[in-house]
Amino acid sequence: MNAVNKRALFVRGGWPGHEPVAATDRYAARLTGYEVSISDSLDVYLDDLSGFDLIVQCWSMGQATEAQVAGLSAAVRAGTGFAGWHGGIVDAFRDRPGYHLLTGGQFVHHAKEFTRYDVRVVAEHPIVDGIGTFEVHSEQYYVHADPGNEVLAVTDYNDDPDLPWIGHPTMPVTWVRRHGAGRVFVTTVGHRLADLEVPEVDTMIMRGLAWATR
Image (cartoon, rainbow, N blue to C red; front, side, top):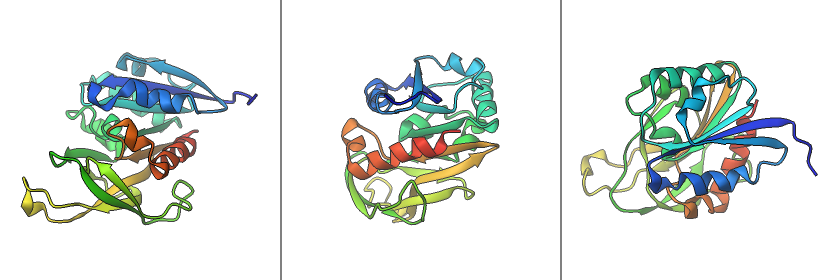
């Protein structure tokens, strides 16, 4: 039996289409060496979070209060890691710029239909070590991203019949950043459970959770 030496908090809720319970259960059950807590309320961000080494958020859209965002941000600045995937981390709390400073990016658009797109690794980093280019069939996120992010993987945006003028810009898919003393991991893949089961995606997330941990 693995000794417990870390504490992780999973915060889940918001839009149910991203399956926040099933998606977080997938990773909470596989974090060996962690004592895992789960919250279905953003009010947990008002508590003392200093005892957690990692916060994993899957809360798409929704609204957070200024105090809730401040509590989360303070914990990460003090060294707690923060991580997540898809809308659960970069399409949350659209009216809170302070939250976007924490994540380093914000979802702004995706085509109406699922599309097949390649994800290619563009950096040397333990999270993407040994991962080559791979294909995803899902939503392809168009994001506004902080130029200070360390981008690990990208995609070339596909044709979008509703917004043909967008063209084919290179979009970040996976990135890491620092927020004070804390580490932040983000990947934009993960609309449905099938996306999380793509081996390369699953590997990035598992490694990302470990990397972000204090």
